[in-house]
Length: 286
Image 1 (cartoon, rainbow, N blue to C red):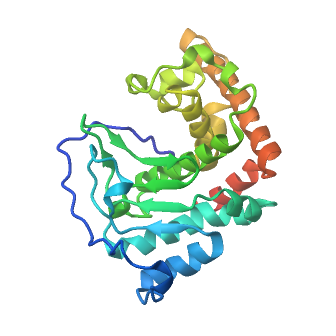
Image 2 (image 1 turned 90 degrees about the horizontal axis):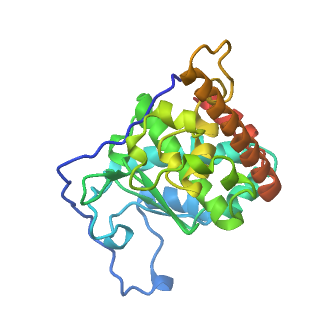
């Protein structure tokens, strides 16, 4: 798959929310009959029974901050997205040594599916969230299209990024990670002023990675997994540099190499999983 650069835009106007009818909250859960709905049955069999993961696709207000706007997922697109997650997120971990045990032990209790991006009042958008290791929220279900490399890479980048947050939330960042490029960070409010090239020169895989240490870690993990050109773009130095910009890119690559080594070692030592083996399984599918 060709390398796709994803840009975050400020989008206006905000979308209007339409909601599925909520299930009654006064039901005794023990007395509820098993659902005959085929999507619910699929979720029960493939996610809840196997991994203890509840998938929430019916829109419920409590899953989104009231200051934000979203669209609910279209029902007919829920299972295609879940199939996509199985193929590109779950199965690659199950196929590597220690991966199945790792996945079952670290997968969040809930996955929330939203039809659109999450729109903030200031016009910016959120691609996904991870909440204290207990929930991952994925967006853009209504645009599912596995033939569209932009949609595919954006979804993979989001799920791998948010899953990486669960790892550092449980095990903290690698011991040396925050000392690798301390002068290169911006802030949550200014990272978007950088270009991809400027981020690379600072030693980061993306502008968003410059926003905080935690986002840097999650972005590095995500790019290692989904970017087929990762090593050519972020590790291999340009030869015969004749200008300061080229030299700065190589200096940035040296920093990213250190982060790469730190992340790979951290995963192996903390979880017993070889992240490069997971990457290989993912790249075979792309």
